[in-house]
Image (cartoon, rainbow, N blue to C red; front, side):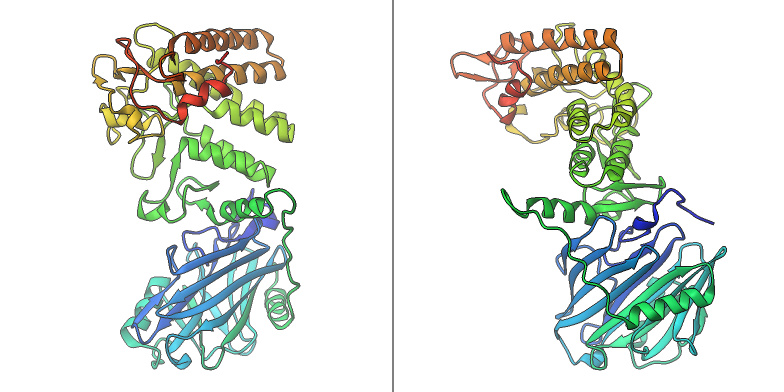
Length: 495
């Protein structure tokens, strides 16, 4: 019955879903969903991502989660802590009131993705759901004002909006969603807990014991010294945006959890954003590093390239993004000494590198342009804008003089940034191949790196302006410059 058996217990309770304040026990698909209702506004909310939610500290394993949530002028401080991997303790505290507390309701909803019925035991004051041989119990420190049952979270919100809070018809002790209802007049502070166990009594006892006690204060280690606090910010951003991809059954750090449903229909992976997440994960958590790298590499196409963008609604397989994968994987290896990351990435990155020379060097000059291949059915395929997507600088003025050549499916500019990164990518692939005991492949990559460095140095230096710049294939330098003018330095092309 475990829907995600590879999730370690320490990470099982976490903010995995599209709802930032929803706690999910991922192996069982059990959800604790906060729901608030304002009588003044006549609206209910599950606190979606947006300006009404101020995200705070967030441990990667979910052992501490802090946020402030606002609805119709009422503001709540929200906290989760985990006394042990199978138990989560949550609390709210009112910070500001937008109306009389009796008319603002805070609700804790217990549900399971498998659709199992949740039952409320009034004698024990706990909502309980059984999945396979396991039980999950939700209890509160103070008794709820009333307990209601609904077909879904959306139905619970609709019940409030249609009938208000002064209604008892939805009372229930068994339903797909059981809701513990509280108001801010009676409970300006609230504590609740959920516990997982292989016995009903143990689950209920664990939840009741956890919510009646005082949770230990989780003091996350703070970065001190030079640039104090920066690493803490990286941790919080990574943790808040690390979610469960329901469609593909995997953990990944999303570009923004705001976009997962609204923009992408469920999930979205921009290649280089995913690689940046991989690099940032390497500062914090080796397991998440591998998860994020695997997601980036999973975008590989049968043609050889890593796809520019994959979402639930589109697949930009006709283009890729600048080749930074080798550089990032080698940096991670230097930090972590994780040979398994090299073994995982090298074959895919080597194929991606070879793809560039086959598909983006139409005249055999050993210099590449951005383009869009004749494969797939993606938005912007076969257009100048689609080709610019490949640069990660879609609307940069540096592309203004670039035309799209339909015969070559490439832009008419040679890009200094792209070719510098290709030189760097070849150098990194050479280092990776050597570390993996592949000296012949290392030598071939090293030759490509040196050839490309020489051509970048000879082709893109504009003596008149004293800067590296893009060139039209006809020979003229492009007027606009960009940060990519400095990429020859990182690739070792400059004298």
